Length: 202
Picture (cartoon, rainbow, N blue to C red):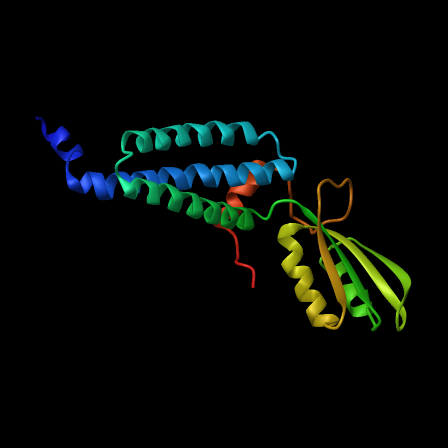
């Protein structure tokens, strides 16, 4: 029996290394699957086939090892654990990428001029409408922004009009609009770079 076969048949490999490899493989394929679903929902279909290829390839490798070690309960635990961790990691990466565009509706019955000026200073496009609320006249401010800029907008709201009501919704697609200077959205490499240059949201 060779040294390699001795190692592969060892208890260390069976109960520690093999489950760990399955865990890592499963985590990677579920992470890719989570990102693939997110990209589909955001309309970034050019990235999806590449992610799908590697997702299935890694899954086949991990499931093959499971089938070869059906008597090892640790393989089942690591497979399930990898699925859970992959979902978590995929969502964390998606949060760092901050994909897509969102619409914010701000409704306030207070003086909103300072908030409007602050948003305009940040080159954030807004539309202001006079409305009537339950307790009197209100200002309704609509703005469309890249998701990564939402933190800045929320900070401006809390700073200049903390009692304002606002709601945030995802937008699948948008045309034209005024966005913050120097910010681009839609290039795949921008998304990759944001993983490493992201400042965690408060």
